Length: 341
Image 1 (cartoon, helix red, strand yellow):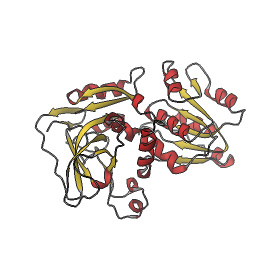
Image 2 (cartoon, helix red, strand yellow; image 1 turned 90 degrees about the vertical axis):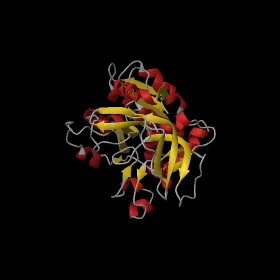
Image 3 (cartoon, helix red, strand yellow; image 1 turned 180 degrees about the vertical axis):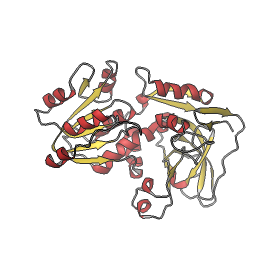
């Protein structure tokens, strides 16, 4: 089969004759149709999550090609998307629906597990979810990127009528925005840093868009909330100043979700513990939720969550390097790239 192989830090190559995956008894082999390209894949190829060689790609949709001897829930020909967490299956975390927190956990597309930048990929049976008939492979191929933000709101809950601030208008920010809209937020404020991003933010559901290059975010948020701050403040950037604003712009008794991960070399200010305590803020973090796949797939199927317009560019497998560079450079209007096998 053809596959993109990460063979040394910073370098990938197309292997025209890579071996077909081994199908263990409780695993399946998927014929990949669409694979989303993520900024995390760039970090993997740079060596931040383990050592080569392996096949990257953790956003995967395709058709079941082969099943192991103990597989009972799927059959060849089924359309599926991959839920990436691989775990022991019997610890407290796994049994409570938090297998991504399992001490023995790993992820498809992260070393040592080969991912979906290939014609075929092997995954555990419990990592596949059925794709609704009216959801395309490209939509399913990027749903993992939306699942993490959606899964956090699904886990923590959100009351109708909530006012929300979202800092960052990348994939995560747009996914959070569509999620809180599905949960009936009353007002969604999004911060952007490019004028070209204003219309995109409005297209996906923002009620108020603040260009922080030309406007003061704190002033606008207070104007839009009668001086109270927002009920829910979300940071997707991992930027120190944005994290501080996320806390400052939440109303007293409100909630803060931190999703963007600061770089290892980033200088972070002292966490505003005093403000959190005195204003009774709840601060939450998270990165996955295996229980959210079917609810999100249902929303995509009914058109309430728009993944179709988040697919900006499609590349053939042999142009994986160009796809990764597009993700890295983030041209105006770009959201997500997909590889076709």
